[in-house]
Length: 280
Image (cartoon, rainbow, N blue to C red):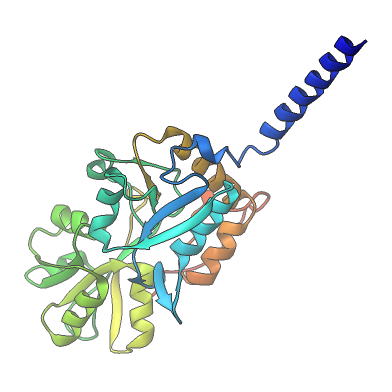
């Protein structure tokens, strides 16, 4: 009798453990995710790149911050942010200083050589911010012979090297420094992502963005260490759920109200893409 009871108890315990382990596809065991600290997702980001990631009233916020937080929480992890210059973020993941990066980081062959990437969670535009009336039109060729400021190590840097060989490229550590140079007359334009460029236009009516380039070939994802396949899988699952639930759309509308939305980011059951046009 006692042997039968013991066997039944063991079977129930095993069943309970199995149900617990399978209770949520999106929340993996944090101890099995190759994290720097169990249960904590250490995220590298920038702090002066509005609307991506920036400090406001002493609090880090922005599209990337809220999106990374939603993804981490969906995966059952606590997000913890470290603020660095953009050029140091991907190397920081490759060297094991951070688990991932959340800073509008596009997938490129150069970056894939040292890190892996999660599923894509944004596809956007890159734009040229300039002063009104300085001769820059909606043609990229109108920047020929002119000085173009950009943030070093970014997609814009890579794109300009390939497509703007007649333009003099001037590199800065962040967008604020590049825009300050534009206002001072040191450069003729600043190559920038559409959303932060729109923020500068809001602040200064003498600026505009006549050139807007869609870059679906350089989608945005989270860099993650090549030695962390379990973490990548957990984050991929979490990203899919954040999109499916409509949380992605909620965050996107908050920070990018005038930016186009790619149909791959529509929540479950929605088929119509919200109408929007690039800011000019």
